[in-house]
Length: 312
Image (tube, rainbow, N blue to C red; front, side, top):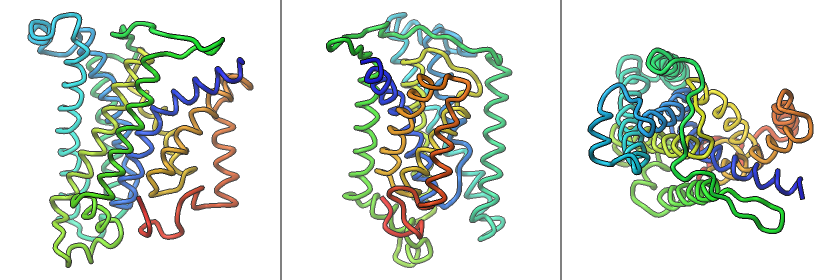
């Protein structure tokens, strides 16, 4: 039963990794570069959720308290995190993609957006450290320690809600990509950007949408992380993102459903690794499995040889 309990805990943790892995998948699938602002957006959303709930924002705490009261400050935290991350995502798009594309043209395809996004990651981490410090920040979950048990297996209600919400959000995203005009435009850009332009797709308007969707996925994941685990810091995004990248690669680059399965599996593998070999060596099985997979199946479980083909 103890092993089953650990698998359940891992599945809940995997729900956090899923949305971050899907965020990486979208950016790589659409724009073909690794966006290092994703861990920064996750971390910033988690810290904003903490600061709003605990009344530690640099300004506006009294206004939030008067509107939402103490009991519902977590609602204000969700609103603040989502709005701020959406706006920040547009700023990041402006300087990691649009400005670079206009100034350097095709030279921006891989290296420049990657390096500039890494710069944003460093900026946000130092912004959080200078504002809230580098020590762990502990929040009080608005839902307490609500649990229930089936036989001897304990389930956390907030974590189950988070897992279900994560899967619902990703399924809605997948449906949007398959069934809507925006989704068709996104897939056209992913397949052949130059041809998409010739077919009338306004890439300059679609790319900001990709950034905002990616940012909101990170924001939701960061919010759920704060609610469930209650402790965040300036570098929590790095920790979560590296594991989420492993899940994304395991599932297959550019494949949303692969990222979902990879994220859930990596969550369970991490918790089981902590249970079996201890926290100090928990990452070894994850990266060892990833290394073996890359040797024998470099495209991942559900990936494709050409990243631009058959995605989503």
